[in-house]
Length: 92
Image (cartoon, rainbow, N blue to C red):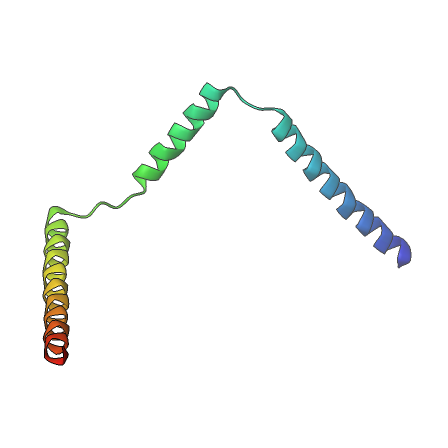
């Protein structure tokens, strides 16, 4: 039993060493800046293909909802400011 456990542990250690060596090789082997830029651009292109763009109707709907929400909140804060202004004027 002890021999089997040692062999299993040795295999695990060997696997870790192999992974470390492959990572070191990748770090040591730096690619040309133009190659890295091309890889980056390909990644950006693939991510853009995954984007779900809203339809024109959805865009208009969300824009109107945002504008209405901003107007309501601005009126709300204006009312609170006016109320506090009246309170301060009556106290002073």
